[in-house]
Image (cartoon, rainbow, N blue to C red; front, side, top):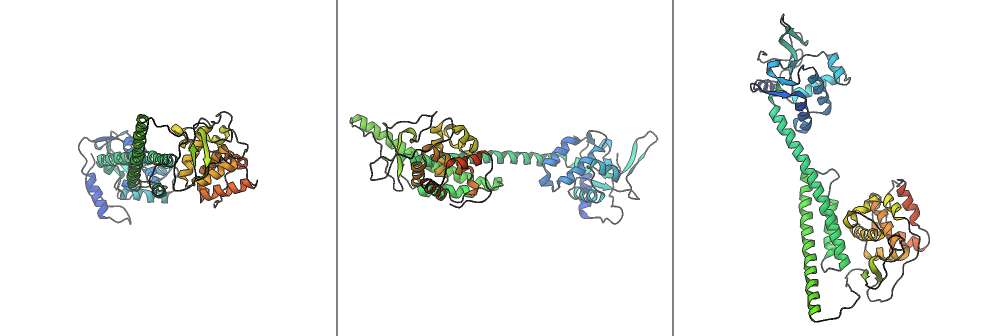
Length: 423
């Protein structure tokens, strides 16, 4: 049993009220309490931000624990370790004496260890004739054992906060994806509503997502994103119910529907679905619109055929632009139709107008335009204006000055230029 008394530091080191408080805390060890030193050390590592210790200070604490003879720390077996500076430096990965003293002071200030200095400042132990330690001078682990329950609680809280952050980030990612695809569906289906305002709100929320998220910063963003998703779903459900009622009424009245479904937009020209238009072959891509799309500007009925340019293997596109797969049906892309559907979602998310994308399709072809959208998504950090950049590529394509191949191969080789492209 160690003798309990207030001890002051040796030499020029001054006594402080913090040291006195730590010594009083060390006297409050519950009788019979024990802890596995390595499990307790892992808890200290988890709770490091709350305890105010550095990673180098933890290296020193790890070295001190190696000098404790047993795996279980208990008051009955003594709580003082007394390594020399040379031995402690070796087990602290060769830390210099000056650095060692600085991090020992950090551990003492954090209330994890105590100095128990001898009359001459040396570290040693006095043993009985039987070899048992009667008194030892060095560093006491009593504060570490006394605060074991507190440290374990702090570590559990840190783990819980980290798990909560992971869950919140996953929920925000899913909600962000839902909103992007729902907005794209609303534009494609011609659902009435102020979708420009909703799209601006979505972009603002995405822009507020920090690079290093915390619970405090992303929890409000998640709530706002969930509210925005609910608003979009309500608008889409109202539209779906209206269409269902109209379909029932038309069946009752035996009204013959026009085969061309016309969507009236207040913004820009869009693609329209026709039932009699040919569908592209998934295995051999052709420069035809997916799912029977055809291009028509409002007030014009003539069909416009896109230019016939060579497209590239789908596997090469997905290898060079893997991010586009997240926006395909079911989070994957199996054929060209899936890629073109994902491109519609992505161009809406990037703020590319329907007219800009339609002009690109006419100039490059459907597959190549979708490939360019995938490349723009992959290089998003280097492009200021995706819509302006796409229009510039379209004009260069019409003049014969741009080809998709070099851009695609550069991404496939991982040689993306570091300079920013201004659209």
